Image (cartoon, rainbow, N blue to C red):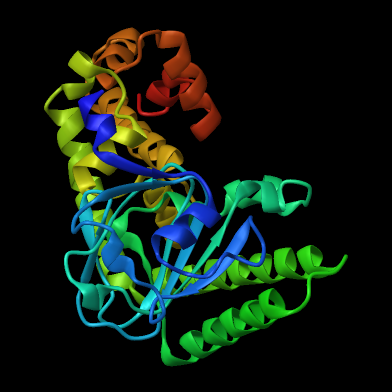
Amino acid sequence: MQQQSNIHHIKSISQLARELRLPKPLHPLIALVDYNNALAEMFPKGQKISLDFYKISFKPTFKGQTKYGQGYYDFEEGGLAFLKPKQIVYSPEDMESYEGFTLYFHADFIRNYPLGTTINQYGFFSYSVSEALFLSAKEKEIIANLYASITIELNNNIDHFSQDVLVSQIELLLNYSNRFYNRQFITRKAVNHEIITSLDKLLISYFEKENSLRNGLPSVKYISTQLKLSQRYLSDMLRSLTGLNAQQYIQNVMIEKAKERLSTTDLSVSEIAYELGFEHPQSFSKLFKTKTQLSPLKYRQSYN
């Protein structure tokens, strides 16, 4: 309970505006904050903050680091950072970190729209700090124009179409972010291939050291923790570069290890299944056949 009390909980966008000494938001469920106009020193340095709403921060240019989660987001080249409700964000340790624009919107604002359901498909809300979206000059211009359009709409008199327009603008912002993340996976191929190499080494080591025999099948959570990546980012990166999500990639490496054991040892299928971390040999046999179109025994016979 003591740990929970150290988190400053902000329940509404109106409360956030008051604490930043900003005018009352024109709409209680959505606001776009220009941090040049906010008195963010109201928050103690390093304060843990929990928001009950979504947050999309856009920093066109920035020199410094902003902490949230357990790491630091280097905004030196500018970019976008995403937070979903209940995630922990830390107030920066220096006032220069308050820069750029942040869009806040409550889940209730989009609840009666398709976006209320599909927003969970935008995986970058689950990415960690080191996986933020870095933008090219052209991409920054597109995002800046979107933020400007949202600002104009928020400053218009609210009518029956205001919410429809704003939800459409949020969805457009998220779709562009999806596109730019996909570009980032491609343009950072060298870095990402290093991650895949580390992943391969980790999985090979896991099976060779019989970790699977002791601890069961390697989970996506275990692998992503070892690689210091969020589970969602790892899956999205792998899907972009290999066409497989993290679970499928792990299974493929495991099947290759099973093929090796079937073709080079006299171990029974059950022994190999237990060695790989399966509780039930039938589950191993079913997965193996799904992946190879052959049962483990049929595969072994093809080598004899």
